[in-house]
Length: 298
Ligand code: R5P
Image 1 (tube, rainbow, N blue to C red):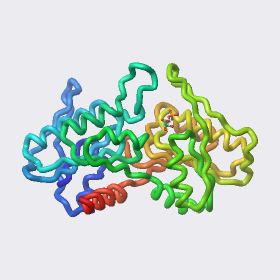
Image 2 (cartoon, rainbow, N blue to C red; image 1 turned 90 degrees about the vertical axis):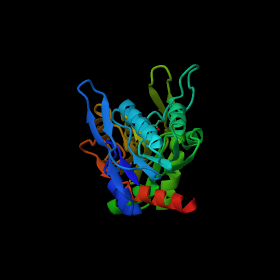
Image 3 (cartoon, helix red, strand yellow; image 1 turned 90 degrees about the horizontal axis):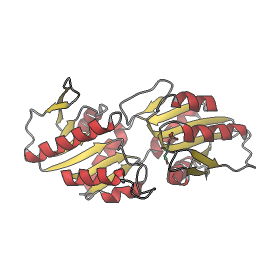
Image 4 (cartoon, protein in one colour; image 1 turned 180 degrees about the horizontal axis):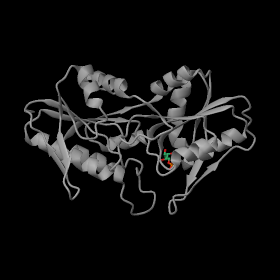
């Protein structure tokens, strides 16, 4: 049985069609003081429930709604709860970079476990290793096949795939593998006090006539990707496309990236806010496929 929470991105229909499962939507409103109200006026006893909710924008609200829904379902006697969370907020703080920092990524995953989630499905979490903090089964759905299809439909042949930092290498490698092209990884340094980033970029690289794809998991302020795009253009790259899993796009991030010289920006449809000037790619089929194959394994 699929239960859609208020930020389900319309994925509930896709999942229930794909799995031939019952679909219920939570009745939802926000009180004048800003608190969330939810009502689940349907029978859930004995069901294996797949809850769907993304967690951006309004991360704190969306997570709290998720936790409250999980607990309510469990108290009403469901058999199991799985959660499909296309964008998992807080995952970037995946360790204590500065002494004493709260590792919010770990805490969110532990809270989901403690709340009673048995299986967790996320899309391209910042660092897959962090999923070990979740006590149940976790599945990280990767975007490479979606990006590869898009690259083919643009008509690019063997573009160079670039990762802005070492953490993004697995994405670049996997996409390049599907495209039969090569990949390159840059080095990024972040000042942990100011948040400022700096890349170490190879001085001698020549890219005349080459098409390039820059892949990353998240675009937030657009700072990381625009610096890379500008550099690639300065090295002679012919066309530069940006592909990322989650488009947060704080402030004028999109303008920044396009002004740096990107031809187009592609992101997956994993968050609720859609921004003009960006192409959104559907994730429904991949989510259904991940649910189906993990259920077959059980
Ligand atoms: C960080 O390591 C992530 O993978 C992204 O590169 C980062 O979150 C992008 O942030 P921004 O767009 O603000 O540079």
